[in-house]
Image (cartoon, rainbow, N blue to C red; front, side):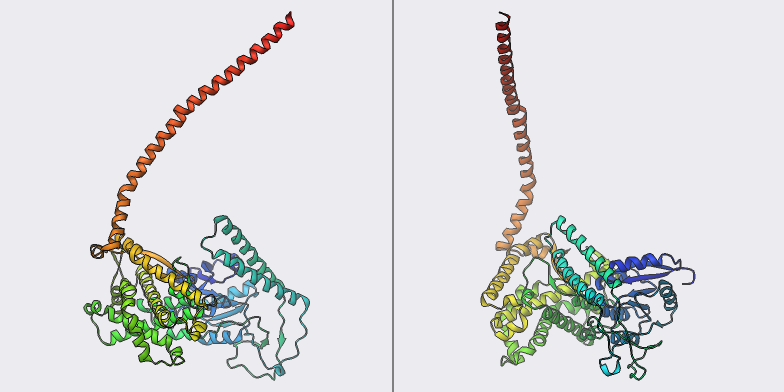
Length: 570
């Protein structure tokens, strides 16, 4: 890096700060910002496109600490520099132990930041003094009453944050008209700018810790210790979900870890299709997605240990799906079935009552499972639109992620359907799993009816249509939302096996495709004839009539005027 500039990726949810930092760094020829990100998903996407020399991260942003750990896990040689206003010394110390190369508080002079960035990019570790908070009041000097500016600033920030949530809720509406979207986007920019300005004006209150105070568990490399009352609680760097991370950089590890990261962003149904998971509380959705993902990982390990060959995978497809469903169901339901006086064997027995329906309606319709298993176990090339891509290529990884996330979503739906079919009205289930608006028996019945109608529509209309159009509909996670996409796949064998109503649907589609162009041509021809008749025939006739009337009125006026002139002459 001696003759080329240091390439930076800045990650911060404050667009004003990102812009200001990038502008300030333009004055230094040896440092260049090549990319910016405002969320965990965007940051991981930028890193997948190009790896910079250094990452500047604001860990106080949503999922910031988790993103820090994710980058350290996926890119162990990539140095991370924390540029933050956070006062969470516990997480900062944990990050230092975890291998983060540098830290500086926001507000540090740009010249000092640049000097530290150069050292960190060169491989050194540079940490400003970490601010610590001691809960023992006896170790601190009394804190004076906060002045009016601090109180006013914190009150204003709270109001701005509340308004931002309301504005974001409006922007998240997929049916929002363009004009309204422009209005709310402008409103959001104004609030972000106001929040940044208030944060710059509100003073930070600092209290010096006496020298007799005990040392922290991991002292900073520099300077004395300060105590600042933290403004908010941040998520811990060590989260339970980090136990699910798969070490390594293989394609399988990448798709599993990327899926884990996307689950952590949230699972909000934006597909426009009613799904079984809609009845679950947000945290329960994530919990059950985690369980299915972890179970899939363990099944891959079992298949490897059994030395299953590639040729055996098609025959084991149904067995793998059933094992994934049963084990995930037991893991998720284990915390409830003892309260119901049940055991694992009883749960399996209850599941077997619905097994045939679930296999026919859900499991057997999950596409590309064999291809996913081959990709994960043997790192085979993945076919996308009849083009084979290397397993480590971005296209193959993205497609494998979508297939995996669709599999998880379908398994989760099957688990929730089993619960709805057998335990939907049990109070402990309702209170622990359901959203508040689904607690009444009427709402539960309405929800189950919506799900039933969805399956009927898929069986008789959507699935034949997708088969006829040679495509699969897949569910995938993106930016905290569950969305749908369609991928091409040859389905001629399924098309030839259709009968009854599904077959009639394909005939109706073919008939529509055959008749609609001709019908449009006929309508267009008739329309042109009507236009000609109205404009050239009827229009001209009306014009002539109107012209005659006007001429008649003109002649009458002239005769009247002539008669009056004659009388005057006499």
